[in-house]
Length: 129
Image (tube, rainbow, N blue to C red; front, side):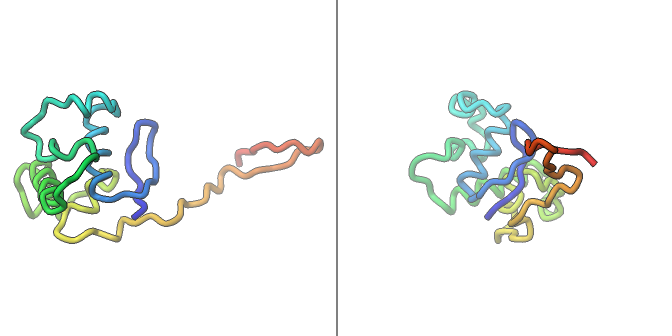
């Protein structure tokens, strides 16, 4: 599922699954430092065991950890998890019992304010307008 998430250099669209979503969330938490993710000291975080996105993982435990993290993020208010507005969070599509396919991003919108133009000499360029 292609999803638009927050990254180090702004927003990006990536093909996401639960394993990658946890890893992306941990990168976000660690300021996009891979070393900080691998040396994470927050052992009480529900995502801690799955932070690297590597190795054999129990899918049900991974799903449960995402739900527990979302519950923690919403201060233990289960009803608020389904009302979450943080659509750029990589865990957003997996916060409920079923995957929220409504966040699937298939095509990036075309930027109409920037269009390629050719100059008289045939050189390519861009024009704002």
